[in-house]
Amino acid sequence: MLLSGETAVRFVLSDAYTNMSREERQALLHEGSGPATMSAFVEIVFDNSDNRFPTGKDETVIRRTIGLKKDEYLLDG
Image (cartoon, rainbow, N blue to C red; front, side, top):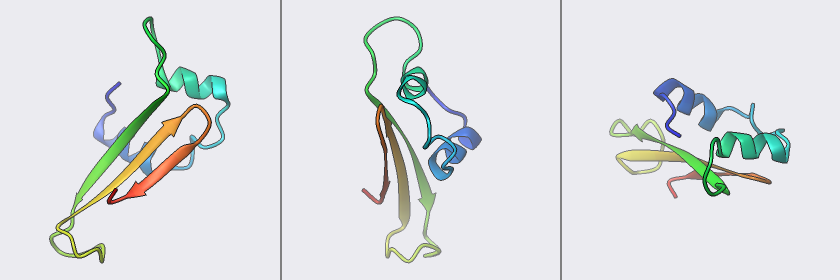
């Protein structure tokens, strides 16, 4: 599943999806036939050449992984 830019940003930065049931998470992760998907992720890469995020890197990456039971957030891996 591919998300539009605005939808992906909202998904990564919002906590709107954190209280979903296992069934709701499964429906979000997998639609249609074929093998079930256990997790998915959305990653946003920010240009940080102006050092807006004090990471010392030219790019800052925020990644959200959603699974059947919990979510995981990563900043620069």
